[in-house]
Amino acid sequence: MQVIATAGHVDHGKSTLVRALTGMEPDRWAEERRRGMTIDLGFAWTMLPAGEQIAFVDVPGHERFTTNMLAGVGPAPAVLLVIAADEGWRAQTEEHVRALDALGVSHGLVAVTRSDLADPAAATEQARHRLAETTLASIPAVSVSGSTGAGLDGLRAGLDALAKGLPPADPEARIRLWVDRSFTVRGSGTVVTGTLAAGTLHMGDVLELGDATASVRALQCLGEPAQSVTAPARVAVNLRNVGHEDVGRGDVLLTPGAWRRTRVIDARVGGGELPTHAVLHVGAAAVPAIVRRLEPAGRRQTSVVRLILDTPVPLQVGDRVLLRDPGRRHVVGGATVLDPAPPPLTRRGAARARAASLAADVGNPDAGAEVRRRGAASRGMLSAIGVPIGDAPPPGVIFVGSWLVAETLWEEWRGALHAAIDRRPTELLDAGLSHSDLARALHLDDPELVTPLVRSCPDLEDVGGRVRRRGSAPALRSDLERAVTRLVGSLQDEPFAAPEQQGLVALGLGRRELGAAAAARAILLLPGDIALLPTAPNIAAERLRHLPQPFTISSARQALGTTRRVAVPLLEHLDRIGVTERVDGDLRRLRVPTGVPG
Image 1: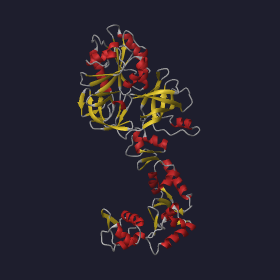
Image 2 (image 1 turned 45 degrees about the horizontal axis):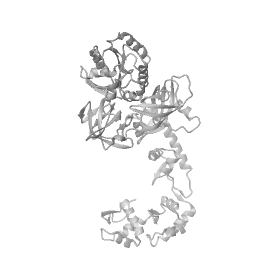
Image 3 (image 1 turned 120 degrees about the vertical axis):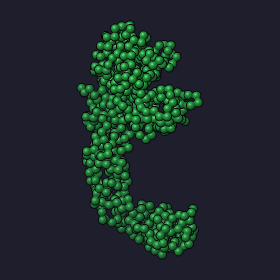
Image 4 (image 1 turned 90 degrees about the vertical axis):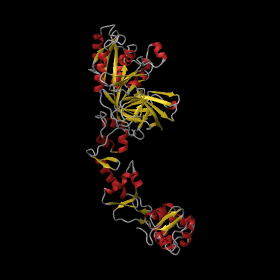
């Protein structure tokens, strides 16, 4: 199947032509049929002689319904441009072609209608001339009469050729289905329709809808039920547990977790003067946007701009969108999305620098270019904005776990890592820096990057989650060392008589001091500020060895000569390090008769 949108001036016979080709009535509303004018989107389909199915999205031609027209044209890959032989090129023909050109539509067919009323040659030549400077230049033209049927066979042959020349859709692509219609069916609930441009929908699929999810209860394609529908196709989706009022035109169904919805994009805009406020059209959506130039206005045919959207939209690198001036009600121009996840512009001169970095960008997704510009990017983010990642890293880029990092930035990080280690604070303990401390110092987006970064530095080591120069030993500040010595001395005779908080405070040991002492392995610190000798697990294992196995918390507490406050976290610690194990409820047994793993 292929999906083709109609376009053209009001009353030039778009719906009449679709009706003649398909035998179906595309105008769905009684008012449309009464006025003889398409107001909203219409849908019809037919089988061509060569066996290709064509689904038509019939759009309104009146200027008052431009938004409706754009909702139908946006997701369609090709257009049937209808021009009346007796009237020729008119105002809305021009506006529709400007929209198609802005959206980058390059596949189409001109149908010169009402050829029974006037010689089609003049209108055909006029169309060729007007289309010559657009993306639709050189598309073929046929003459036809929707009322008499003359030329319909030639039109069908032209549509056959058009369908065969369209690029194939990727059946494995992630789903982005723009909703162009939403309604309720008695006994079934909410149904939405749209043009499936890529991917495959299955009955039972779970899809994102805004901040919620929706499951596919049933599918239809061209009026027939289906277990699955593969793009390109017109599809109707019956959604489970979604109210009709919760979904409407411009909403979008997405593969869960596969897209990044954004309110800020950097784009290359073509066209004339740019307004500060515009409406961005993409798919079936129309979203108000603020337009900010990133470079001074000049004589260039294109400009790099930042678009700030009222609502988040799922966009990817290379998407074509259309900007319309809401005040003057005309198409400003088309835009190519260069970056749907741009950096903030907070410093003086940042906008001009950003424009310079995008000067040569034309919106082709390229992992190497993205990473070199960003410095580092996660696989998930790149995938979400439509940038493919190969099996081997691009030149100048390295794979680091789930991240792609520019080699130059990696070397900068290595230097900054050494500098951070060398200037680390030693207020309480010289034990190195934690991963979170280093992530903050190096401005890393993901603390998981610290581990491979440390491993790449042979002179550094990671001891218990703290990074330091290899071979250096942690040392406590002298006054803290004296306080810890007093604590250790008080535990020599009764190793499980952990002081209460008041006793620790009296020794000058608050939470930070206890943490430093534990990092230096001068004490064992358990949850609840339970401070014990570092050898406490060995001592406990030896005493518990004499108990009947398995044993209760109560019997363990008596054997250790301590309180439940100490016994419970100590036993949980012994579980974690593999000295004991639970066998039934609170019953435990020793896993090793003596000794504690190092």
